[in-house]
Image 1 (spheres, rainbow, N blue to C red):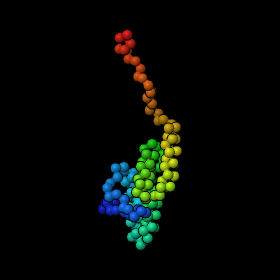
Image 2: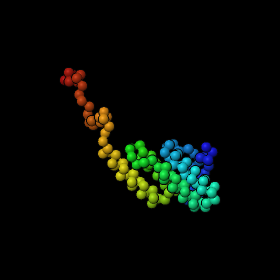
Image 3: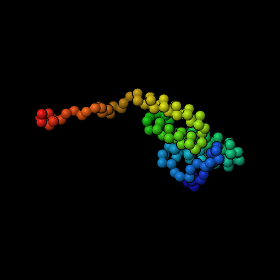
Image 4: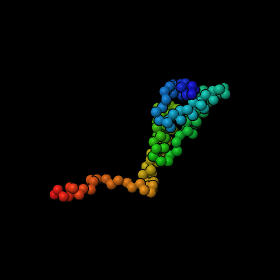
Length: 133
């Protein structure tokens, strides 16, 4: 898409990077921001209104805070938005705190049947090692 490659202005007046994101979730959030921003500008809204529309679309595109991979992608999206000033730093801190809680709770999710966790520590002695004593 040609629109995805255009620089879109964020609140600081800087454009979002004109390169594809390596993380698919971040790329999805960027595209949501860009579409909403462009749509708002096409409807003769102010830059401020367009930025707010883009921010809302970006936040709606965030992955849910469930499961390790989604939480990891959520953190990547929020970090990107904080660095590019798509959302304000205090908002980003709030979202990252929520991600920390979700990530801590992932440890307590029930395991899937048949997925035994590996024991930590030394491996059991082999029969050959016992015979060599």
